Image (cartoon, rainbow, N blue to C red; front, side, top):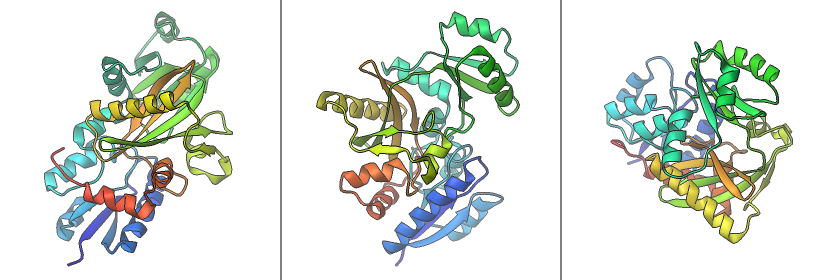
Length: 305
């Protein structure tokens, strides 16, 4: 009997378009491997459709708000249907840039200096100085993905302008010290780090366009050109981040390598699976082809995690 897999994609976040790219790519892979696949846009009463279909598992191809912050995971838990990627708590923690940083710091993972500010916050410049955060700084929403709403501010005027833009749409904003240096990203699958890739974006940083537009021409160096000792170190740091957040399945952790130290920026519990995405590229270097990677993720699907 053919097993039915529902691929959840689309949704309501600002990453809707990218979610469709991920979902359709994974759907094609599963069909090639003999699965019966139903693609489902996660909007409206989609959960009623899931109940009616009664799938063997859900491939969660959603990105951003509602898709990787514990919301959809809690719905799937209530339906008692196995789903891919991390569970409710890990998804929620990883998506919240403040909470994840607190957990990273507690577990001796280096993070940039940061400050959380609320919509009603006053005397922002004074607070930034008190935290000894120097310009340039990175300003971003606490709970967005794909570098949406991320600004690098070289001075106080740029900060004020970008802060005004963000505070219209977000209640909480994170300000952190900009860490220069090399951009290293590591894929982890369950308890194993698959590998580390280095990114050399032609843009100012690895933003939304650099991630998803072929025109951005970001250079990928796989494996990252580090010493054996440093390569092992960043793999272990990514595994540790995966574990302390309580993740399962696939994650991708983003690091900056500066003055011989690794700073973790975030752990992504729903990394992209498009033709330009990093996790498939890292997996392919390890001998795991795209279709096999997707099947592994489906076989790993579960709930109550």
